[in-house]
Length: 295
Image (tube, rainbow, N blue to C red; front, side, top):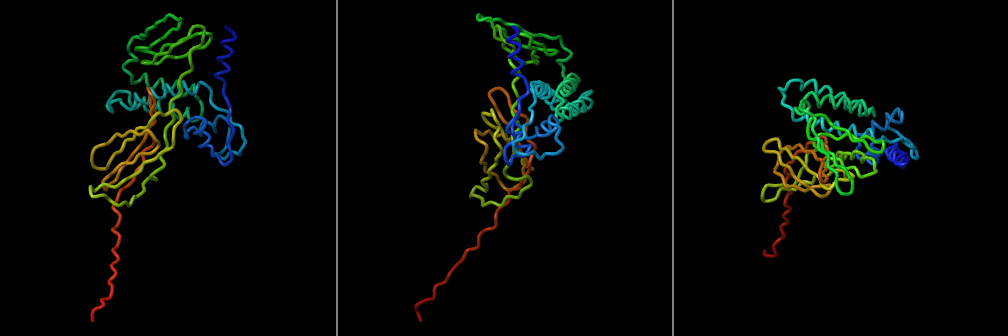
């Protein structure tokens, strides 16, 4: 039992990453954490004064508390996002969520999880429900715990404790500690077209112009979902298997965002960016008149 606990603690211990030549702190965060926004966390964790880091520098990475905080933050974000604007205590919950986001950016993961959990409790109807969960043991001795409603339950095995959020199932193999919470997918970063760019394109006979939307890859993503919002008209939701998507659009102004997808979860949406599609001026026709041989 002691050896199993020691192994679990070693697995969850913070690791390090070495800064590569020409790499910014945001690029290190994208490589190590799957999220460019994690640069502020690395900065706080390592006591850095600015975003400039010399190549070869070893930076400490977050431990398991980060995954726990991300999971609780995701639940709180969804609760605030889908809450009715007139719902009692929504404003208070939004303020609590903002506090949690600030804690997370400063690598205070336990404080972030606590504040995010408080935001969720203010809004979630299930928070007032009795805590309910199921436990199933199969023939191999593995135990599966599923949280159904109320407050999250906790699973402890081999000296390691793991929270199980509502709607989540955790399988614990016999004689093993519970698995660490799965790290959420990183948020894609749009790269093309640049924000607020005016695109001048040649339109087809259909009145549509070919536009390419592109973004940075996210580790662990199996696909991507793009939300395309014209200034006039209905929002479109498109999927892509690669890190770019070609779409034919009429002239107009658009906003768009992208999120990463995996088998049973997806990332937060990227920051919205905008672009304008306009028809390129027609190319002038150069007519050359040959002199006649007739006199």
